[in-house]
Image (cartoon, rainbow, N blue to C red; front, side):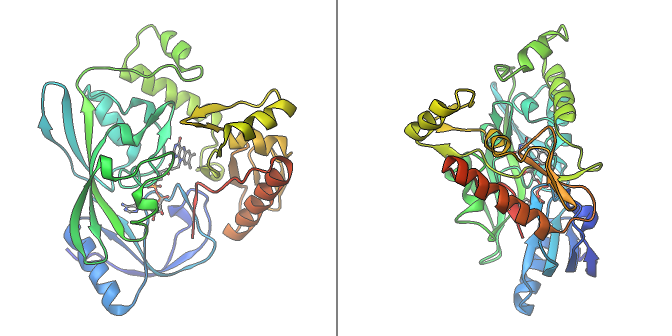
Length: 337
Ligand SMILES: Cc1cc2nc3c(=O)[nH]c(=O)nc-3n(C[C@H](O)[C@H](O)[C@H](O)COP(=O)(O)OP(=O)(O)OC[C@H]3O[C@@H](n4cnc5c(N)ncnc54)[C@H](O)[C@@H]3O)c2cc1C
């Protein structure tokens, strides 16, 4: 089915920063065949393309001079079950939190800690979304995608996705090449809850019953309290990744700042970027129409009318100050367009 193509389409309501930019062309594709057709047509006509999910991990710094394509495949179905696992195929356009809810309501376990993360199923493998000690890679079995190089349908198993901390093959070798169409998840038929993350365990136990449903409820509430709602204040969640540094580097900083939190990351150490930004004096600061959130130093916000470039410049200033103070580079988690 060929969808409507709209010219000069405003993306303001399609990105959680609320940046007011236009796409030269915009379309929604409800199935794989349509996606392939659009990709082929754009290639023939020399039109560049951008795939947009929920727009919750993207910062537009200018109008997009090409075709913005929103994959809207909405099917979800169980494709295989064995004694231990249920394999569920979910379309790229499904809202991530609806998928988590579907799993929780049907007693498929493993997605509950990833509750209330904005965005779509199709974007979940791109940066290997993660929260509260869980990551998408823990439940992704296979990713189906269109390889735009030859416009064919391909699949890639979890072990070949090179999943890492907010990273995957889709941000590297397959960047701007793979359009995720469906993700096949492998959910456990029995609970194996991960509760040892911050205050979650106590909050869940206080509910009286430890279940996927209570975990989802508690995490949703905690997130609502901690993070600004994009509908109220434009933002893209964590702007920067937490830097992973050599242990000696972390120890050196810790010697001067005994309050520095740190976490083991393989043979290295992960330092919360929010802590570094706060120490560099940026928490709660406003610059023009944008700023750093008052409760979450990792979240840059659009207080209304900010351009993507203003936010980008702010992020560069913050990264530069962190570097000057600690000698550590912090890099964006957000996709800058
Ligand atoms: C308030 C808030 C809280 C957040 N909390 C978290 C968190 O706890 N953990 C976390 O990991 N992230 C978090 N994020 C970031 C964001 O929710 C995730 O990165 C999410 O996966 C983005 O999904 P999306 O559909 O909005 O992707 P978009 O922002 O639309 O796109 C992100 C990137 O993926 C590409 N892309 C999107 N869909 C596809 C597709 N089908 N095929 C190929 N490429 C595609 C885009 O081109 C772009 O490069 C948060 C964001 C906000 C605003």
